[in-house]
Amino acid sequence: MPEARLRILGVDPGLARLGYAVIEATGDTLRLVGAGLVTTAARACRASRLHEIAEGFESVLDDFDPTEAAIERLAFTRNVSSALPVSEVVGVVRLALWRRGVVAYDISPNTVKNAATSGGSAAKEQVQRTVVRLLGLDEPPQPPDVADAMAIAYTRLAQRRWER
Image 1: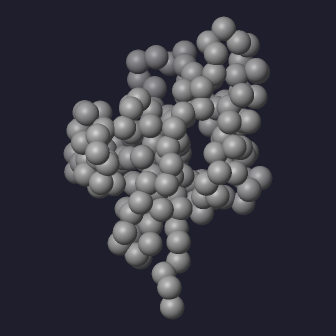
Image 2 (image 1 turned 90 degrees about the vertical axis):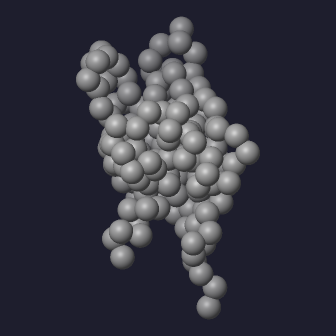
């Protein structure tokens, strides 16, 4: 009997740039299916930007048909003023996933760093290097939002293995 296909969508939420990545797992084989950004114009009103994110994210769901999703949990220690807009983005993402019947898991930034690098205080560059190695990429993904989304998706895959 063939092994089931599992597609995990990793989401790095942001109002200006939402990073996404889809990793497919079949048994122990991982494959990056797609990754990119949903971007918004800084001068547009927040409602318009949220609408752009909703439409762009719906397209991502149409294109990649994920099995489940992982969203990086918000951690605001320095710039608390950006917490509300990013929280609204997370709400838009959750609603789109719910409408498709895709279960979403919250993952903390430290959990991502631990899964990708075995260190909760790893630098973004270290996470990028690990993503390159794990997914067999030729070069580090850019911008960092995309690399983070790949690491988030990978972390959810690792969590699934721990849950067995």
